[in-house]
Image (cartoon, rainbow, N blue to C red; front, side, top):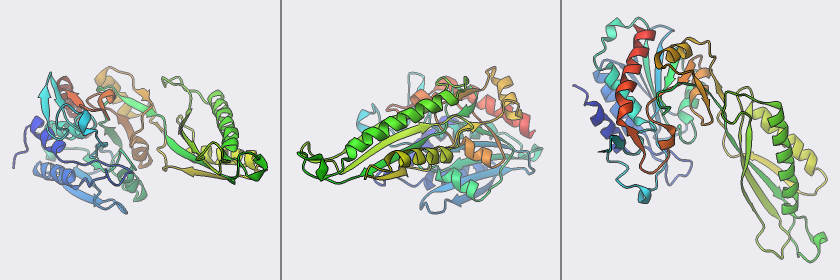
Length: 381
């Protein structure tokens, strides 16, 4: 059965809702997208594995492979999208709209279209001629928990040696990105009448001290760590949310602070958490307040693929651009943990991702297909 034309494939993929979110009211299965991709790659002669993600009902990874051996090329992407604000879209997010030399729809840039470009690049490929394997990886929940990529790491699922993740980079290679974690600091004290501070223990007063310590620690990190590859060349800590108390005339018994950390490559999220917890515990030891440091999610490690790796040098030669560093996170560090050397390189631009009226410019499609074909020729043929 012939697979559809490229634009028609994008239309089919966009039409299948596959939102992933930590909020249950938004979260959806991705199985329909996986089934469609499995059908198309199977029609081209690829071997198909549909892998349920443990502990995540309705979530699946897909591995479509051809050829054998340890030195294969992995073309990877995620099948989920972020949630959407339907009232802010000018068209139906699930109906592909071609207009003004652009394809509009949820997932066009980030990143369902990438699979259509890969399929178009390999539709005439003679798989019998592969000297090294070609593997297509489609994952679940990159936009929320990363459970798809993490499950591959947990299972030590070996795939190949060289990996391209087709996130939107304007077809310019990226070999490094920062990590990200999100943290919660909770202080619990004792409420009481505000006329006499001795009647309680004020958690807001304590959080003022905590915030000062977090900012001092941030300054120390930024003095210690620096990488000019990044536009913001130091690690960041952003105080993003605070809530405490319920009335001006009551001593505040509970206060909670949320912040994110974006470490540079070489900085371990677990070690950073331990260091901060110890500092805050020392600070609050005699305050009478209960301190809790609770990660809001596991965090995404930073990625650093060596500039000397074969895949980095290949994409630099093919595109004419030196591989860069970015602030947003990807599944790259998890693929690297599986023994791959990974580059982020795909059609579209990150500025269109996570936005109403998300689009992929048509002028990204043909160069994207040709680049994928060159990568297959370099690493598989």
